[in-house]
Length: 238
Image 1 (cartoon, rainbow, N blue to C red):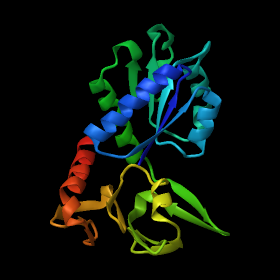
Image 2 (tube, rainbow, N blue to C red):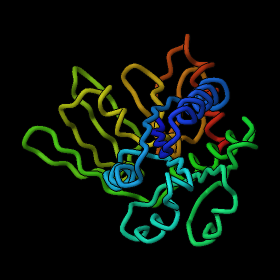
Image 3 (cartoon, rainbow, N blue to C red):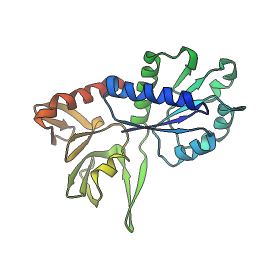
């Protein structure tokens, strides 16, 4: 699930962009996505800092404020996130070189092909970001998890067993549906009971994925073609 955050004060453009993104994810990327829209940069930065977004679409001009000027001033204190800049006023992007953005779109000239390239680049950067430790609180317990080292997840009766690259594992009481919402876009639910980290897949054959450790993760025969195509599309993004 790729979590998209759109920061734009034009509500009609938010709606248009959201529609286009959902269509591309469904028809081209073959991946799941969630989209959240905000009109203020302050709220958007708080969402980024909390780790609740994987890709940021940022309008350069928010009212009378140049969002890039403000973003640059706080960039060091904000969690890194692939940022796609958008503008209807190219002259206002004088400070573009000061910001680490992964793509730049002019609203009036944006095509579906450009938007698709922007999404692919942003997803690739998000999936290959440096390992991040994530703190998960379940009841009175806190668990620190490095998603980049997580090979796969196995679910049984609302218990999740997490298997890591160092041969360690962890069992937590958590629903798979809720856990999926926390995972970065390089994770694929390939079975009702399994989620696999696509960065650790070595190959596939009917009807399973083989991980770099040699472990085989099952794929339902009826969904084999769909699941494998999702993995192939992911490789094309990288």
